Image (cartoon, rainbow, N blue to C red; front, top):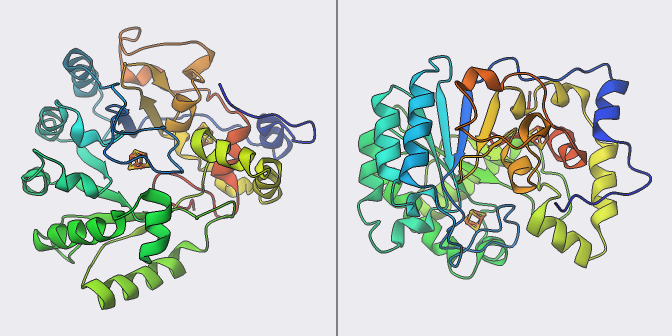
Length: 325
Ligand code: SF4
Ligand code: SF4
């Protein structure tokens, strides 16, 4: 576990209590599934610490167990598939096809450059045929900022990938095929106002590259894993935590994504969100896997909060779908 602690930081749960907030999971609307840590990139801010040498991948038996739980949970409507690069899991297409056959909405958290990996030539067409929603990281509309955070050449490949996806209808008005982009700050600052940033992105990407997309999600950098390590190396961890705490927003706290979402690890372990998964903070205080439960509806109730949660409640709030409220 690598949550840093500092004397002067008010415990996140105490901050909730001070604002009379009792945040719990009332119902499960989204299941976020991490298919593994293998990725064709190794971004400097990656909270999964994913990369080309990682070998963790969800196995077929785990996917089948999940499908059976999902089939028996009609109120859970959306499955958010993430990684690593989830498309590199050999069972990705099977999982997506089965979920669509069950009538579930599927989100693919796609890094865009994976479209150019060997064997992925027909990936865009597969995603189109299945009606998958694409959420793709693009932390800036300027080449140098993207390449600094995500690796040399990533911006140009991302542009080509978005043009390919636009060509199939993704991100185009009235196509029903969504292409949403994710922004995260380059450093230890909060994201700017999401709507304004989305307008800037739309203008720049359309004028410079003829690219269209639906929504921009502005996400805060969470103080965990690679980003937390970088903050510590730069001696800025306490300063960033203080920024998050000073900007604690009780309204955002009422809407944190874990109130309607559960995260499943590549090995079937259950967590309250992707960040808790990476910090190995188990759901309900005890390690549980998808083989320990009878149904997904058991996963309502209390949430394991810790001080990294200030990253979700600062300013406009932050979730995997952008700012809150
Ligand atoms: S593309 Fe995504 S999963 Fe892969 S290293 Fe970058 S942030 Fe991590
Ligand atoms: S880090 Fe996870 S558990 Fe904490 S508030 Fe955010 S979504 Fe909820």
